[in-house]
Length: 263
Ligand code: 2AM
Ligand code: CA
Ligand code: CA
Ligand code: CA
View 1: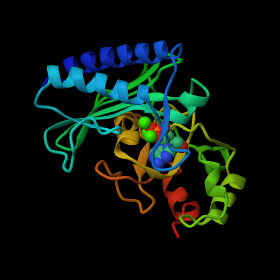
View 2: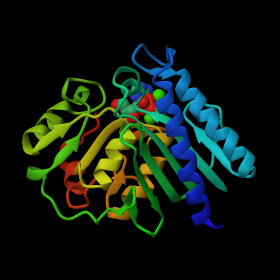
View 3: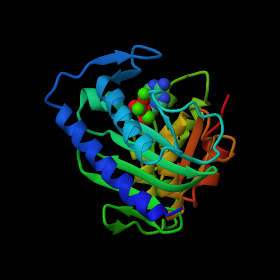
View 4: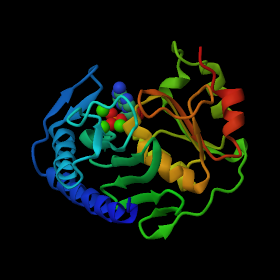
């Protein structure tokens, strides 16, 4: 399989989808809710997923597509080639801010990530990687992550986990906030993973992410040396939603042992 030609194809598809999203800013965007009042989806999320599926099904009829909005294939195993897509990651930011959202895409062969993309549409910043060939921000190679310490770490985390909740020991998370240099909440998982891969964040923590939130980012982050797992230390799940921690390799073990405690 020639993944370099698929890489070129995927990049041009993503850029075209980004163009469509930017054009949508002048239209009326229809916002609906999904699981709860703050879980948003728009006609643009759905249209962009359908745009990708139409093209990929036409040009690669034997590949499968696993997308958040459900227009793709029902995926219960990782055999063959699968495109794992989040057409808009950070829909709440898309609706309220028209920035801080991304297209996230990972292409997997027999469960191994071979191509990964996170496209910050408004800034026209494309994070990408081909397995074993390094990670890039646009045309610039991202350097390998270098050692850091908890006391100097910038950590992406949602402020919900600082309040009492039934999932995670919030006192330990408060101690984490005291011990690190700075906490940030961007509200778009894929971008936060791209920031860890590029050293803008040293870690990103989320209680519950789905395969399309992480699939592209895992391929990119692996190339610069970031370490990803769930909160039990097991490798990230590409078939179901799960807890997620990605970090600079020098602080990942300490984050798991001391600060991230499931109830
Ligand atoms: P989304 O915008 O594609 O839904 C928000 O903190 C981040 O978590 C976003 O990347 C968002 O992706 C993701 N997320 C995953 N599951 C979610 C859910 N059920 N509700 C809201 N955001 C969710
Ligand atoms: Ca969503
Ligand atoms: Ca998402
Ligand atoms: Ca989404």
